[in-house]
Length: 546
Image (cartoon, rainbow, N blue to C red; front, side):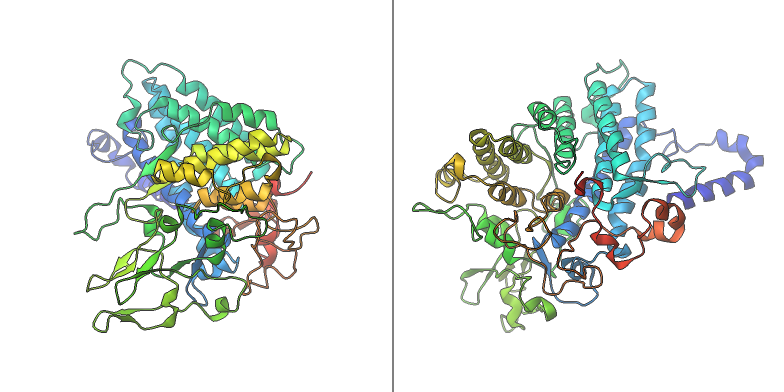
């Protein structure tokens, strides 16, 4: 799409060459050009568009990780994703929102910032470039990097995730240096354009270190995995809710139907979206080896993360979760409608409450929605909670169970604090037998399942499940005893063409159609099997053991 714009621009230049002088003195100051907007004018759009790319990727992967389900519709994108099948149509938006709407605007912002020594804008631009390309590498396994914004190259080469990761760490190191510099005299304060951290430079530095810790933690299957480096990055990463990078969306009003500023996870879910039994089981500690005892307590996040609906008598009931291992996914759950005149639903599958909040014409609550997908919800981009779970994993690998237990509990606490859970309820839950209390009892499953909850709707949820090999043993077969994500099974409606064997699991997203249609020769050089159904079960670089 970007390339088409460049071609049109070139054509326009040739046809209007005799008018250059006239055009030069009639630039419209209200129209954007390659050089016209200042850095502070460019940054808000970059951040907003990245949020769209990143959270849209999260919504899609949440169907693959079986946090979310979808009503039965044989060819619907999200239903197909629950079958572990991603096609070009599903792949397009995260790709386009990054490359077309975000990435091509970063270098012009950096160039504009350098002219006035706006070092903080340069640093933020480098952070966003590292974050976006790292996320693309994790999601697709291959992506154009070095040539992606060269207007003279219509078919940019692809790089493997391993090559992109090298650049990601370089960019983050450069960003930290720029963010530590003093702004030039004529540079705008970062707060003018920063819609994530409100101009708090320290938060951006912590975000950069947090991203380093995140990407380093992905390498647990590689010989270069370095727990010391991860802990060093964590030491300078967010440690509190206030230091986390969280975007609070806007609920414009009850009187407008516009969702332009509403949460991406509100706009990306619909009346067709449901929650899964697996997700509910994880929140309720209903899985093999879950902590339990004489002082169990229901997780106080449960009612905020799982939708409820109102019965005809006014009472509230919690949704059932869709069980992907059952037959119900073969032809259901069915979509349903509410008849306000009869004050009832038309299908029995209304027991699977829709995810998006809704009210009937008579005021009956059709769905409470969830904390993540209300119009004014928060986008949890990188939090202290995630950092604590990364630490817990590292400490457990280093045979430091006491420190792992502390980090595990802190991860739960921080997520609950972000959600606004009452402090006394948090303390009671953390002291209950529904949370591991003895360091010797803590397992990787306990840590990663709690992280799965804290990373709801995040692309990182799928990264973790891949690098932990889902719930399999060393041979790749489902194994409840040794696997990490207990209960995460091959779905009963699995897309057999892409996953013909019992050891086949979703490992990468399909490539976007733009590249298939216009850049397939370059793609085949790094992904020779891109057009085969089984391509999406091929592990990406960090998902392969050295």
